[in-house]
Length: 157
Image (cartoon, rainbow, N blue to C red):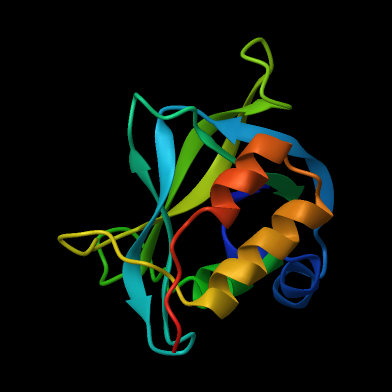
């Protein structure tokens, strides 16, 4: 199963813990969306990553992993996905991303998107944002995207 990670699952240690079968496939761009923080996580004590539709955005960069069906079940639990139509933290859905950002290289993937978004967007904690930035730098996402992440306002806990 191909899974597109754009938030804290960019962290290689976190994805290894959640999905031991993971295999890095490629960097990819999710067009027509932007990164936002629309859900509060008690466990992280932070607003956490989401993608929201925005045709004016250059898109959201992330990593595509190939994971097993068993790991998908573990990932569902970590992301608070209990099935279609249930009270989910994140919904799991299918979408297309572009491998290495090339529009001529579409790839079908699974993605998690916040189920019940806050009425407004918020700032993540510094720790959580640094977690995402660290993963983005590890995978060498495009420099302008990493700079965009670094320019996001963050809050101190």
